Each structure stands twice: as structure tokens, then as C-alpha cells.
Figure 1 (spheres, chains in turn yellow, blue):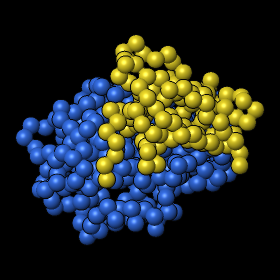
Figure 2 (cartoon, rainbow over the protein chains, first blue to last red):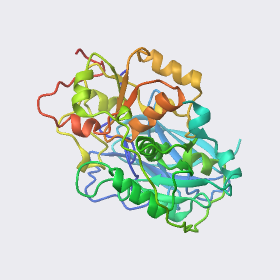
Figure 3 (tube, chains in turn purple, yellow):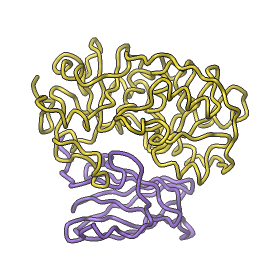
Figure 4 (cartoon, one colour):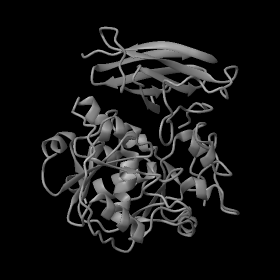
Length: 115
Length: 282
């Protein structure tokens, strides 16, 4: 039924090509207002994983958005304060992490491993 | 139509990279992924540069489509195997174009680039050179394309399926914040439309869910199998994904994609709009 009124979803929430994930935050982004969930995907050897599919799931586990990690393993979502799950699928395995996001930048490390 | 005539698996694709008569085509709005590595032998189509008219607000017409395919070396007899990023959104869009212009044999790789990547299948940076052809497109098949007047008349009469996110459906969001140039004037949805986000139809690896799961999803959402259906989203790409599911996988008879979608409808003067999470009344 209702989903949280996230003021936005993400880089690729609802349409079209994702911006460069490793680029610096645009100066137009007001961190007093935005809730940014960003981080790096790493494998079991702590190496960065580029090309991973990172998705943002809302508090009920519903799909919200998906981006591809940069060659440096970086991903970024514009979300809203609250409980989220970031989940990565990659050729080096999968992983997920619960995030309690607050306004501003929320930095995480998302580890993937083959089961 | 059915899954067997519309889809191929990534495994099948890898086994058939050298098969004569097949042309692999990567389709995306942002083709930098192709440039960084693609399925060996695949050519690329840029959804914006190649498939949209540069001046009018429309996609390429019959003559432009003929010129494009001739120049890229695709012939009428080729089986075109499409794939792309974003869970195959733009590849599904291109699939719809190929069908609209009467191409006989066209398939989508189930899961697109994502499944290929997750399976750790190989990429190539070599750009193939194909000899030019003389491609002949058919007149557009408007049985699969809906225009605005028909959509307005369909309110309360046909199935309208809104495949955007719930927040866009409700009118809380107009579009993702990074796409300010493609917003409509108003938020909300077409009255009586049911909300079935495109993502419901896909597994997390990008492949389509099973026929049984898909039938259940649209049935529970209130899709009436005895009625004609029009799918829409914001710019027509996510609704191509759902059009593909309903028409090509589940084999529903009369399914149209309204490619004008919310960017057009939400800017029309005087048409009815519903706000909130419920379909609303006609």
C-alpha cells in the first residue's frame, strides 16, 4: 500500500542512466536536507568491487532503487531518514547491510562474499 | 507469444555468439557501459541518439528506423537479440520498436547485462563492423502503441497499469531528483489505473519471474483479463518492460504501451488526475 514518502529515491530510482557513482557530490546537493547513503563494496579480501549491482530496499524490504558500483566500488543513494537495507549482488558474491540513515552523509562498507 | 519465442537465457546467448543469422544488440540510454565492455560481437544502439527523433518529440519513424538498421548492418532476416542495463528497460523499449516496425525475429536476453555480469560471463571491447544492409520496415503497428486520446477514453473502461514507483503513482514524487528536465506539470496518476511497479515482475538478478508468479502478481493487483490493457510509466521505458511481460511472456491479446506516459499525460490541460495510493474513480 503506502510506501514511505522518500523525497527521492536514488540515482536510478525510476528512470534512466545512473550518474557516475564515484563523482564528488554535486554542489547543488544540500546536505542539511538530503539523506545520502554512500559506501564502498568490498570482497572477502577487502578489495573494492566495481560493477556490483547495489539496491536500496525500504523498511518493508521493497525495492526502491538500484545502481552499479563504480570501478572504485563506490555507490550512492539519495534516500530519506529511516531504516533501509542496502544489498549488493556481484560476480564475487552477495551481501547486505541494514542502515539507519539520518540526514547528511551516511557512509557504510558493504561486504560481499560467496556463500 | 510466450517466453519461448520472446526470451533467451544468458547461457543460450553465450553458446550462440557465433551462430550465423543472430545479431546481438546492446541498448541503453547511457552507452558508456557498452564502451567499457559488452557481449562479444554485440553492436550498440543509443536509445536517445539513435532511437529518438532529434527534433520532434517522438521516436524514429519508419524511414529513420530503416536507415538506422541498414547502416548498422541488420537485415530483415536476422534474429535480433537485445539486452541492456537497468534491468533491460531500454532493451525492452527497443524490442517494442522492433515489433512496432514489424521485425519478425527478436528476443530479449533474460536478465540483460546484470545477469551476464553476475554469471561472470565474458566481455569484449571490440566493436564489430557489419556490412550495410537494405532494411525494410513495415508501417507502424499501432495495435501496440497507445496515444493520449485513447488513454483518456480508457479511463474506467480498459485496464490501465501504472508501473512507476508507489510514490510517483501517489503524486508524492514527479520523477527522480536527478532528472529535472523530464518532469510533468502535475503529479498523480490516471484515474482507475492500478499500481504495479515494474520491479514486481523481475527477480533481483534482473530475470523475469515465472509465468505463474507473473500471472498472480497482475491478477491480485486487479488486472481484468477480459479487457484490453494500456501500460504507462513516466517516459515509456519501464512500461515497455511491463508491456513485454503482459504481451510477450503471458500472451495477453491486446496490450499497448503508452510511450507518452506521465510526462505527456501529466502536462495535458483538462484531463482527470487521481492523487494518493488508490486507483480512484472514473
